[in-house]
Amino acid sequence: MNQEIERVKVLIIGSGPAGYTAAIYASRAGLSPVLYTGGQPGGQLTITNDVENYPGYPDGIMGPEMMEDFKKQAERFGTDVRYGMVTKVDFSSRPHVVTVDDQVTIHSETTIISTGASAKWLGIESETRLNGKGVSACAVCDGFFFRGQEVAIVGAGDTACEEASYLANICSKVYMIVRREEMRASQIMQNRVMNNPKIEILWNSETDEILGEEEVRGVRIFNNKTGEKKEIAISGFFVAIGHQPNTEIFRDFVHMDPSGYIKTIPGSSKTNVDGVFACGDAQDNVYRQAVTAAGTGCMAALDAERFLAAHENH
Ligand code: NDP
Image 1 (cartoon, rainbow, N blue to C red):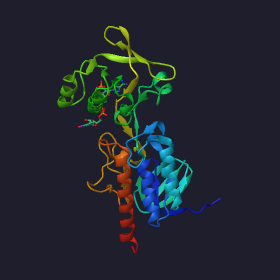
Image 2 (cartoon, helix red, strand yellow):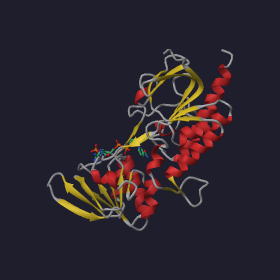
Image 3 (tube, helix red, strand yellow):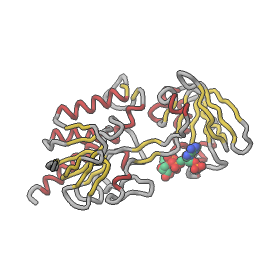
């Protein structure tokens, strides 16, 4: 059957704070946006518990509930939220050709990329089982829940150093689990953690298992030089071994940095492709907060609206 190809003014790819905020603005501007949720509707916040740093929620809110609120607000103004995964794009001309679930083809006049990033994980069973029960990939989000307690963090890059320092301000002690005998982080960040009396660095160490049934109670590590194992009592386990932006499908068209973060023109959400805008963690490896993602989502919708207005008669 020869189906007619759907044409939309604004297509939003991704359903985290960036995508839904773009949807709220675009729908209120009368642009009838279509939003595809991707494989993890609601994005990274759906795998956190309490969110206490998003302004407007004085008592905090559960991550999944907050994303449900974002969705409802976007739908209230007419956003067409659809479950589906964008599997292919062709941005070589306008309208953009976007394929969903390898089946449906959509032509979009503008496209907003808000596909986010995913934290990298160690990949051990106890990490998955205790995720949200003391295991976290975001010290800024969850460190506060461990104030006055002992925690561990894995990683040795700038993020791990920054997060270890952040945690040391809140927690009584921070163990930093480093797999080699040196760190990847910049010297200044390394100095900061090495000079912090609350941070103990465990060199040549890898995680064997995170201990605890209902919540984290400790971690068993092993020294990859000596084979020696030891258990440390902790109540929070942070993973800071990098993030992966979910941008692979755009690689042939959109300029990115070597890690895959989309490059935007500073002070805007514009990419190198006409009518393609990027917001949220897909283009931000520095702040990575829900509120900054929402802010850039707003920018993307406004940029798309202005782009459409300028191209209306062309
Ligand atoms: P990086 O890729 O720089 O570092 C990842 C770290 O995790 C490395 O030390 C790596 O170890 C370690 N690691 C990776 N996999 C494992 C594993 N399976 N087990 C144990 N350890 C593992 O990521 P970051 O998120 O730290 O930084 C990303 C980028 O952002 C960098 O360019 C960084 O400079 C930048 N950044 C800058 C900041 C600033 O300037 N203020 C703050 C935060 C980030 P190994 O070294 O052995 O490979």
